[in-house]
Image (tube, rainbow, N blue to C red; front, side, top):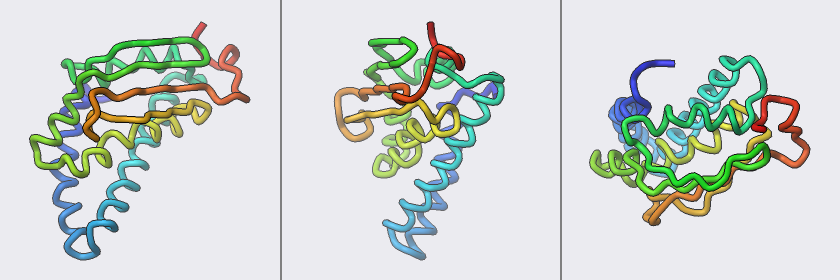
Length: 165
């Protein structure tokens, strides 16, 4: 993976996607522009997850996921309150999100969820589809924190495929 911090990658992507979104909005309307950007970013997140999983050489578990989390928190991009890390659960709250701050500063707060937040669950599809994420609120959406709750699907056996011990 690149040495460029993910926060900076997202800034560069947003500078480009801003213009793509504007052109799509002009030609097809805001709803279609949102749908296209959302679908493209989703594909990117799935592909990124797949790349991380392939680099491991085994089906990732939550211990592996915890080990790569610093990629997203680098340079204090996220301030996280860890709640639980086990083979079945990975739970934390994000108390500060510089991604959200950056999108708002760029004037992209309305679509920040498309550019970043929606990537979180989609990443798991490529990384390990047995990992399921729920989140009821985000800083991007105006909440005080983001509540990330990852669970291993009930039919998964995290003890035999790279899960946390």
